[in-house]
Length: 130
Image (cartoon, rainbow, N blue to C red; front, side, top):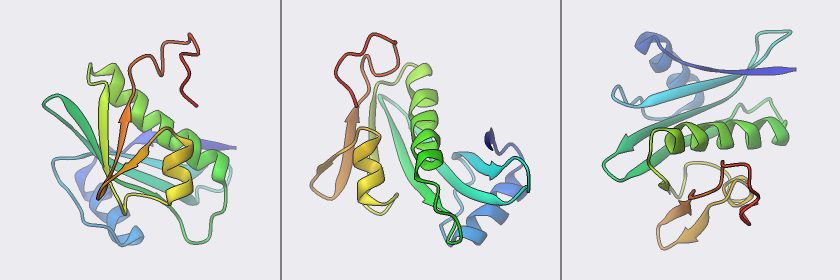
């Protein structure tokens, strides 16, 4: 079993970013995915809510983890939070996460970025988003 929680301590966020080899962004929100039983870190996301859109910088799986379902849920949780804040459009860096993961959570490759229109994605009405 796994658990996703916001990282509310900036020192902890910086530590997790170092662990994953990503740029620490002190103004960004962050989530951590960890194994509930062992406490092992399985993944992390780092993102911002900008005017009119969200931006996902990182959606990374720990090198020793291989739980694609958990990463899918982390990605969707990150997107859902952005959507709940009233921002239904989201972009992501091309190196935010693995291409297959980004596609599976609803992003499309557009130039040098990924893009997702989350309108209706989380309203429970099966509006065609996968």
